[in-house]
Structure formats: structure tokens, C-alpha cells
Amino acid sequence: MDCRSYNEVERMSEYSKAIFGGSRMTRTAPVILSLVFCFMPHALIADDDSDGAKRLPDDIAALVDRLDAADWRTRNDAMLALMEVAPDWLEALRIKSQSGISIEAGLRLRRAAEELYLSRQIGPAPACLGIQHTQSVEARYDSRVAPGLFALRVDIVFPNTAAARAGLRPGDLIIGMNGRIASSNEECNSFTSWIFNQKPGTPCEFTVLRNIKGRSFRPAFERGIDRRGFRRLETRVVSGSEDGRLADAAVGLLVTISPSNDTRLDLQPGDLIVGLDGKRLPAENPKQALEDWTNEGDALKDTSIQVLRGGQRVRLKATLGRWPLYLAAGRNGIRRGADRDRIIELSSEFEQWWRLPASPDTSDAPPPRDPSFFWQMEP
Image (cartoon, rainbow, N blue to C red; front, side):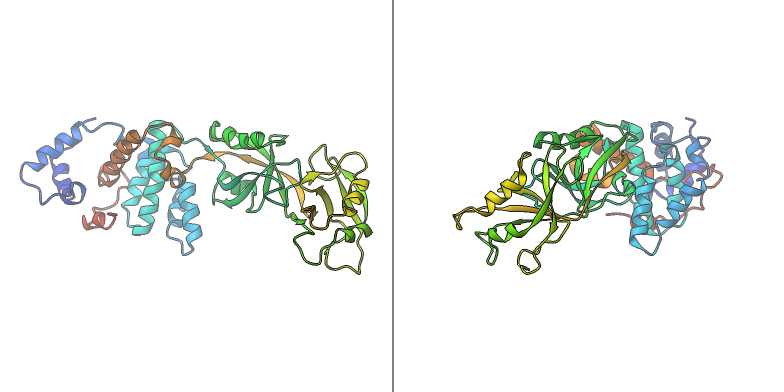
């Protein structure tokens, strides 16, 4: 890289107070600063004729403009979308950050640019689905999960992630991945480890239980609930191949007629009995198993019957995205395959480069700004 001219270094000295945190530069400072630019690593400063120094395309420029939107969700979505653009546009984004955008927009643009910078230096972040979930949920912890099934319960769907684009919702129960239904805790937990070992852009498919309600009746602990009340139900046997709320090899009893004179049970036609005392119904003669349960003589014995209402099994296709900076920030860089010291070093290099004023040789470089602008961005 060629050394910058002395006149340019003189112009750059106006920004020394903001960049280096010192007082006004002495007469020897331009010489020192010129040496800094002569030997600055190519990784930090892009050549003026590189793709990164060209004008931003309309779609990326529109994302930058939305960083100043009135709605905070729009601003946040734009920042996350900028984390997905090609790292070749880093120089143009740096120039754009000095073109008069608001302080808040500049901070959001900086976060997105740092994600791109780290991706260029140490490779893209690991694949990320973009949910916060409860691991390995089963019938004893969540009455919506039939015995024999295990699920990841979606608690939060982060915006502008693979999960949001695929249509996952809070409350969904992920019971399968890539055509495989989890039949054990270990198999359910393997879903998250599989995602972690993939690269961004990997396609996958999720099997989800949605809009389902569940209840476990416990007659010994619920006043007004008597096991004998279940005797008057009329049911028919359904299998897992008929009803997606069941495990593939399981059976259930679909309520067809519920006694209208017993409102305490709150059962309706279409409700599905899936378990007795925490276990799935026997495949052979499940109606007899229900009758035996209702005739149990010990009224103080802790027994239960699990019933599902509504819901369906759906399949959602997703393309895994990158692990965003704002999610990986608390993980000390482990998710990036680099140690903490390397992450800190790269972040420091990025900070120095990001604060450098744009080169006047760049065709769309903005006019020089007041150095106090940089001080406003200090944490």
C-alpha cells in the first residue's frame, strides 16, 4: 500500500484527538501518523479501488436508512439484516457511517459491521436457528406432550433469524427434525448439537406441534373430579398414523360424546385421551384400560389422566443462518471457533479502523466531520 501524501496526513491530524484520545498534535505528529498509515495492515484498510469502496447497492442502502426508522422493531430488523450482507461492503458501510446518520443509527451500523469484519477474519459464525427454548420437554413436565414424545419447547423466536423466517412461533413444540421424531431425551437433545455443527445456509426441516392444549386430571388432588365421571365418555381408538399429536406407535381415545350433565370434567368431543398415570395407553384394548382406571377403588391414590385438545402437527422448512453478534456476545467467542484473546484483538483492530475518517480519494466520501462526533460514540 502506498504512503498517503503529507497534505492528507495534515488533514487527518484534525481527527487525532478523537482517534487516539490525546491532545492537539505536535509538529512531529504528521510524520508519526504517516508511518502509521504506511505500515497499517492491509486487513484493516481496504484499497480505494476495492468493491468495498464502491457505492452501496440500493437494497443495502435501504437497510441503512431503516436504522433511523421510528419503530424500534424496524431498526432492529435492519441491523440484523445488515449482518447478513457480504463482507465486501465493509468499506462502503464505514464511509456511510460518517455521512451524517444519527448517533443511534451509527451505533447499530457499527455492530453489524463488526459482525461482518469478524466473519471475514476468522470465518462465518456457526449456524444458528434463532430461538430460546426449553430442552427435552416430556409429558411429566408439559401436559401438551403425549407420553412417548419428547420436544424442544420454543420460548422466544428472535427477529430476522432462520426460525422467524421459517414461521416458528413461541409455544411451538419441536418434536422432530429432518424426518426423525424424537423418542428419547438423548435424541431430542441431539437436535441442538446437530444445528451447532452445521454451517450457515444448511437446509433443514422441523416437525412441530402447534396450537395444542393439554391437561392432566388428578382426582385425588382436584376437588370435584371423580374418576367415575370418565365412565360415561364415548370414545373411539385412534393411532399415531391417524393423529399427529401421538407418537407414531401410540394409540389414543378420541372423545366422541361427552356427558352434558357433568361440567366439572370440561371435556368436549374431539378431545384426545393419551395417557393414564403418566404412561401411554396400551396398544391392545385401550378402552378396557380406561374402564379399569375409572374403577380403581382407592380414592386417595395419586392417579392421573392426560387429555389433549386441539392442535396439529406441521412441518416447517428452514435455512440456518449465522450466529448473530448480539447473541454470541456473552459466549466469549467460543461459538466462533476462536479463543477469547483472538476475539478481543480483532475487535480492537476493528474499532481503530472503523473510527478512521473516510479517504478523500473515494468517489462518494462525505465531507470532513467535526471530531466531536466521534466522542459522542464513546461508551
